[in-house]
Length: 225
Image 1 (tube, rainbow, N blue to C red):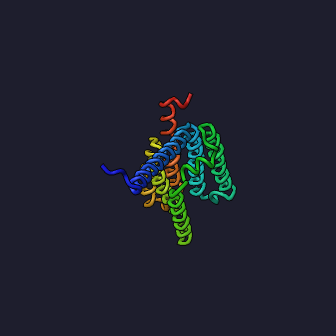
Image 2 (cartoon, helix red, strand yellow):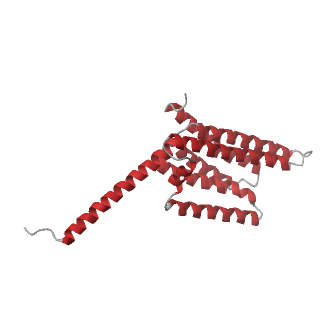
């Protein structure tokens, strides 16, 4: 039997190196998904979602009543400022709690979690999606139909939720994906006939559904004590 040649040794070394690289890649993916799932499993996200959803729905219903009142001029400038403050506060709260949760589960904070979600080639997909969303929003404003932004955002949220469910396998993202897609597609046909009402419906489908399912899941798994 002939001895292995140098070429055979090089091939064996290349295969072993490939196996090590694949093992390291699998470990990195498992670690990233574990961090994502540990953070996303917290009851804080659903709680924030419920608070934001309830505030947005109440605002939409109040604005609808004001717009339908002949004696009223409709929602004023400061009411929109109030809604913006509520949304911004929810966003900052999410970043704060995310940083705390990521640090508690072995991450380095908010940046480590964002890297786990959007790092590598995923960043190109997310960047392209954001660019498409910005272009769509600009187009709708340009043609004078800004209310269609609401169903557009709902459809995008639904697709993003399905993508997140593939990464971390949590039921609230699965339910959110279908609820957002359904609300977004249905509201396309009615949003301009009663914009505030349908914005409230879409908000309920996106934020309230996610919050309710997330809190039920957290309670069942014992994350709420």
